Amino acid sequence: MNVTLASWQRLWGELGATVVNGGLMNQLVAAYSERQRHYHTLQHLRECLAQFDAAAMLAHRPAEVELALWFHDAVYDPQRKDNEERSADWARASVLAAGCGAEAAERVAALVLATRSHEAQADDADAALLLDIDLAILAAAPGRFAEYERQVRAEYAHVPEAEFRAGRARVLRGFLERDRIYLTDVFHDALEARARDNLRRSLA
Image 1 (spheres, rainbow, N blue to C red):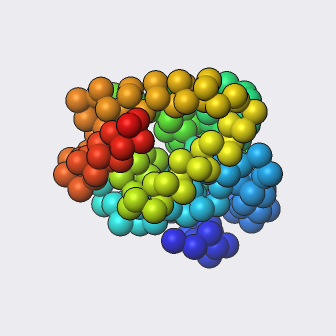
Image 2 (tube, rainbow, N blue to C red):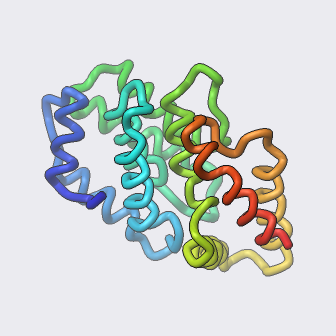
């Protein structure tokens, strides 16, 4: 999926926007291109949008999920703890500024916030889909997974090696200890086994 003005305008049309801000797309592209980013970049955004393209039929409100993907890492500073909250605030304000309803704005913000814990309510199919898309990288082919690991390390270059390894191991072990890494049946059936193999290799 290319990050294009045409796809951006189509998305806002599906959301029922009365105002389509092309400048906002440029702001988001610039945000994903910031120097402190190595994994949470346009590459990650494009990979997420490509996954969504293939799985959009699983969404109850596909346009809201797609927009939440655009915003889910819109604010990213590896030395801060409030990236998801700030990204959700930006998403909410943008949906309201486009003339969409307050309920849609809150739903999109809630989807962005779900990436903080990577947990979703059992009845929240859209959050489950968004989280599965965000975590699809865990099941990447070996070369891409190795690149992902290097990119994450680069984002945490300010953290000493021993401390990084301990923290990273906690995160990866946390995913392995879940009953399911992927919440939707489609992603679970397609990616779960490969993701667990990648995580075990990384921990080893």
